[in-house]
Each structure stands twice: as structure tokens, then as C-alpha cells.
Length: 147
Image 1 (cartoon, rainbow, N blue to C red):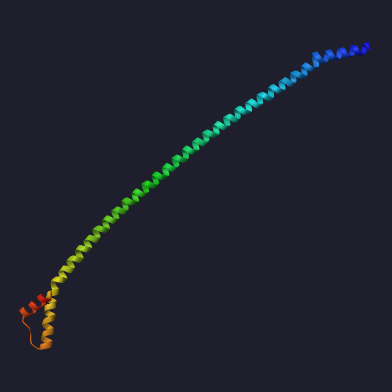
Image 2 (image 1 turned 135 degrees about the horizontal axis):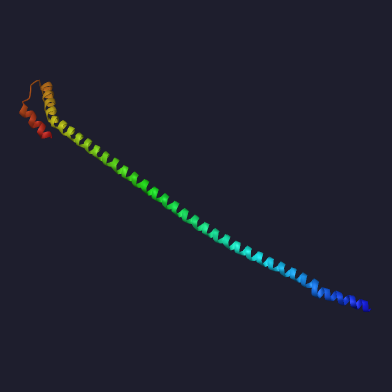
């Protein structure tokens, strides 16, 4: 019984002074390492999130710049097209004005001969119908009365 008590006491002292502190120290080291790893992982995650936000901001800024560039190019193209269209319309209007002037001049010139043609036609009709030639004054008076 004494030996059992002696062995129990030696074992108790060994466990209390040697084995438990070593196991406890190992467990504490392991907890510290796990806590440190978790802290490092959280820090890395925060850094990754910050970089992702920065990348998203850069992407949004680049997208906005690209949209602005596209809108500017579109506006410039519209302005150039409008300028070309205005130039072509001005040329067309000038050509149309010249053509109208020429048509009016030709019509006015043709209208000056209408009286003469009407008088000659009337003289020829009268001569064919009556057999006698009408005087120029009678024909001019008749044409003037019809106009």
C-alpha cells in the first residue's frame, strides 16, 4: 500500500510538474498559432477586399471615361455630319435658285412670243375662214381683248 501510494505520488508529481505543463504549453502554443493564423487571414481578407474595391472603382472610372469618349466621338460625328449636310443643302439651294431663275427667264422669254404667235395664228385662221386677210390693228386689238 505504501508502494502504491509512493507510485501514485510520484506519478502525480510527474503529471503536475512535467507532463501537464508540457501538454498545456503545447496547447497554448497551438491556440496562439491558430489565433495568429486567423488574424493574418482576416488581415489578408481585408486587404483583398480593399483591393477589390479599388479595382471596382478603377473599372467604374474607366467605364465612365470610355462612355464619355464614346459620347464625345458621337457628338463630333453628328456635328461633322450636320456641317456636311448644311453645306450640301446650301449647294442644292444655290443650284435650285439658279435653275428657278433660268426657268423664269425662259418662261418670260417664251411669254413675250405668245402674243406674236397668237396674232399670227389668228391672222392665219381668219384668212383661211374668210378668205380675206385681217389688218394688224384688228388682230392686235382682238388679242389684247382676250389677254
